[in-house]
Amino acid sequence: MPQGDALASLPPADQAALTPYAGSPMDTGPEAKAYADHYILAHLNAASGGKSYSEVSGAYVAMTPEKKASPEGKVLSALRDTMFLGNTLAWSASVRAAFATMGTIAGYAAIAAYVGAVIMLVLGLLGLRHARRLEREAAGPPQAPGATTVA
Image 1 (cartoon, helix red, strand yellow):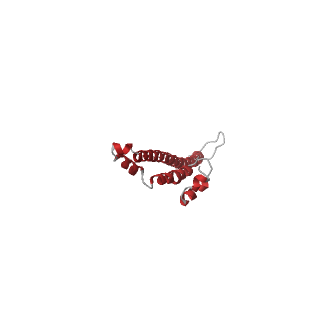
Image 2 (image 1 turned 120 degrees about the vertical axis):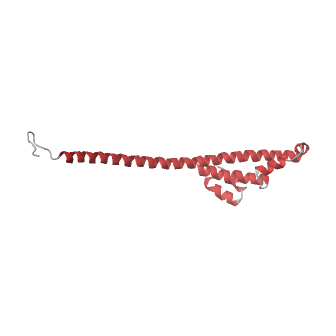
Image 3 (image 1 turned 90 degrees about the vertical axis):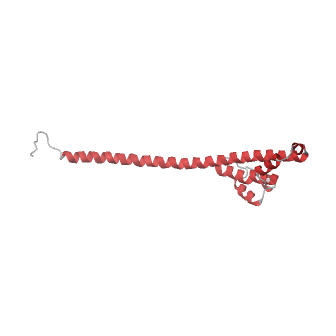
């Protein structure tokens, strides 16, 4: 994660969002989300003056071939490429954050499934014990060898 001078050039809100992760490896979903939303997006907004990729690309596409070949067109083409790559990178980081969230939920679901399995095992064993007790009660009291029952 960015630190030091890389954070100093960002707006205060973005700096505050990234400061807890400064200098650490980006290995969690919240870090990836913060990087996408507060580092990449801040740089894209600074480069494009707050315009979206769609707006920058639309302006470039609307240019005539002569305008595209001009210095202004080349600058806009480079900005368009930067916006495309930046948005792709931000999307990739956001997907990482989403999968991290799904992994966390799956982890909780696995724990719940294991707890449920233990409960079902205990209930099953208690049911078998109860069934044996019912069989013994239905058979009546044990009789001595050679004894006869009177009906």
